[in-house]
Image (cartoon, one colour):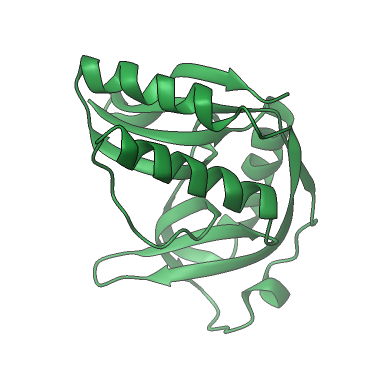
Length: 180
């Protein structure tokens, strides 16, 4: 099963991103947009994991949050990852020392537990859509698409699995650890 550790947002935040993507659709000629229930921020993508590895990942999560209190993220910009086959539209957050520390702690513990994961540069973001083509050419995406720079409370992290439901990939929570 494909798994990842993420911040699974509360419903009011998912609703906000749902409204944001509805507005963004008006500025796009094509694209596949994230469904409301799938908005999250991946902290560490693991990939395929068996039951034994999943139980170890849960242990890692329990230990990683011992020194981490709940915190907030501030939404601050929009961007596009340009890829060969797809453009990924994302919302970014201001740099957060607590999020950086949490990412670092999870990565360190996953290595100590000898659990494989994708070790790519961490760029905190929320994926809003894939295969996006904007109607207007603009390098200043923030000026083209206005949005409120909301504060996002982070009170827990979740182990999520990518599962196909009704022909679409969905993030399904397997385990949740609350932050103090």
